[in-house]
Picture 1: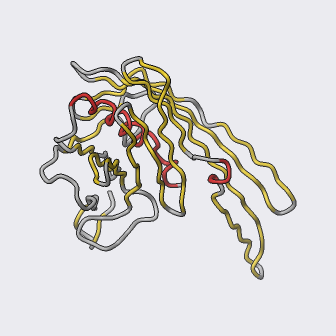
Picture 2: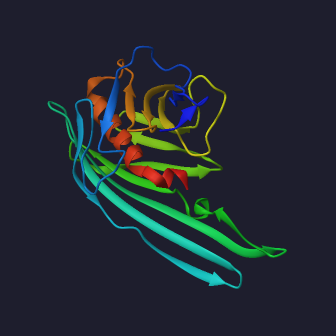
Picture 3: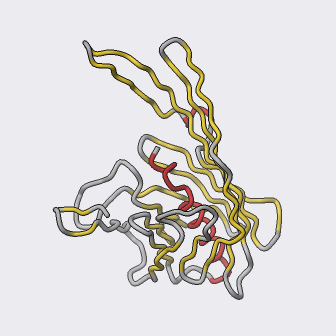
Length: 227
């Protein structure tokens, strides 16, 4: 557990404009992550979870090498009395590396080049069995991950969060994600420790399972969010 000022456990800095008093659901099955264990929070469960292995290759070109890896996962997000959401995702990473020397010290420089091949996260979501699947895609922009979530009710904006509560410190890796509608956050996914999901109570009930499926996708992104 990360601690700030040597004593206080780190907490996510919530984005401006998020609803005060929104329920916060602890997450199980996210951290630590175990093979094919369901992810659960509040009334929502990501079941029938299928996690593909990570496959990759490295091609050396002189002193420069190109490395690519891809990982896939799929699940069905369910809640009692609500329509299920099926999700299928692919996570891609592309890195350029170069070995060198500074005097007698061997060095290596690596650059994340995933954006050259499109989104690093590409997902399709099917709500209540109604196709075609609608996309959720994230693109790496420096240390941030930004993207869009399409839905039957319109488009949401997805942004990575990097702040810690009570301090101006910002982390390199995401501390969470916010999902925004009409310019304001309606869901926050906290990645710190075991994780928490916060949902604005004003969100219509018919849309909540869909947003919960997006939250599960972001939780399952795991270490790839830190690349």
